[in-house]
Amino acid sequence: MRTFSFCFGQLRQWLKNCIALGLLLCLVLGYSLPAQAASSANPQLERQVLQIIRQHPEVILESLQAYQQQQQQQLQQTRQAFLQDLKTEPLKVIGESPTTGSPNAKTVLVEFSDFQCPYCAEAHKTLKDLISKHHDDIKLVYKNFPLTSIHSEALPAAKAAWAAFQQGKFWEYHDALFSQQQKLSEALYIDIAKKLNLDLQKFERDRRLADTAIQKDIALAEKLRLSGTPFFIINSENFSGAVQISDIEKIFSDNSK
Image (cartoon, rainbow, N blue to C red):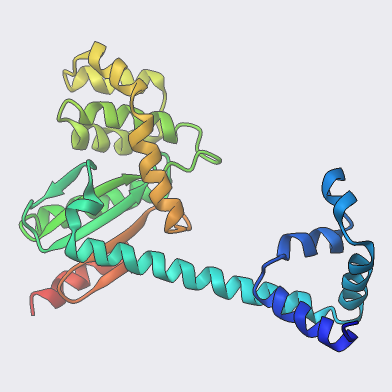
């Protein structure tokens, strides 16, 4: 028969590696397992686990800390892989996303944005000045990250902008959405399309087809675990990584030295 100390040592390692973290939390919180699983569980083992947890609650904290560290390491690896692709295979990162600026620029700025986000609207003003000033030195890539839980018009606006993109008018449509952010609505989307002389039948068809491209952007944002919008990632001669909009000008200044 295994000794108590040996069982505890095994459990501590087990928890640290998070192999059964979900089961452990269920036990601690008092939830019951599904009937089929419960019938096959070892009652004696369950009692031993609960007894060990009661006597050594620090095991739970150690397990959670180990899990958090593991998640952080995985996130760092994911972001590093993204930055490496941005350096060596920028076209892979850009995909079919809208771009502006110089096609051959060494500096690539990827923006994750939400058309209903007020901070994105403020950043848009800064970006327009930046692109105008450094047009030959930067390529701006737009990625959709509509925060649908708090912005009900973010996704419809993104679909409308994507539909405009299919007719070569993304940036004009993009600018119009941000300049009239307080009016986001179906009426506005149609009005902008008319003012840009878009083919309205095609515009309507493309809006219905926009989900795939937008969801691809959202999946990338979630994979990188972005905390909100706007979010900028830049690759230049002197800097590569996440950056604040207020720091981008300094990066260009450093590149020119």
